[in-house]
Amino acid sequence: MNGQLSEQPLVELIREISTKSVGGRLRLEHERVKVVAYFDGGNLVYAASNVRTHRLREYLLKSNLVSEQDLAQFNDRVSDMDMIKVLCAQKLLTQSAAEQVQTKQVSDVGRLALLWTEGGWGLDSKSRL
Image (tube, rainbow, N blue to C red):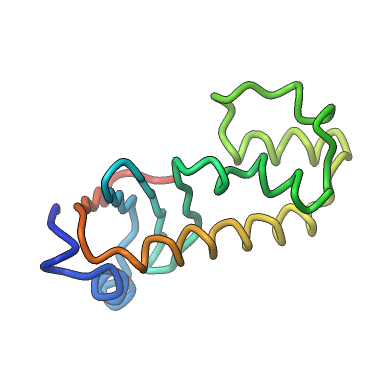
């Protein structure tokens, strides 16, 4: 399914996804900004953006959870999920701290997308996180 946010606002999309217990990937685009949100059984499980300030690396540094030196082992192509797994395995980050920082990240990405009244969206119910 695809559409325009001007015709079907994000809040309505989320309500429909939740009501129908849909799973999959919702891609949103507004100008050059992109957001992807993953749902499982109608519940939001993760969201990410191509905005640099919404990258996990930035959240980890801003919250002083890990150092720039600790993050130097990761290139820009490493997914946020993989970065969390490695940092936790290396005991540089606790699972609790990882969950808190990811919750903040997903909330901020969601708030950004909810402000959009223009742009496109696409839902792929076969795609999973």
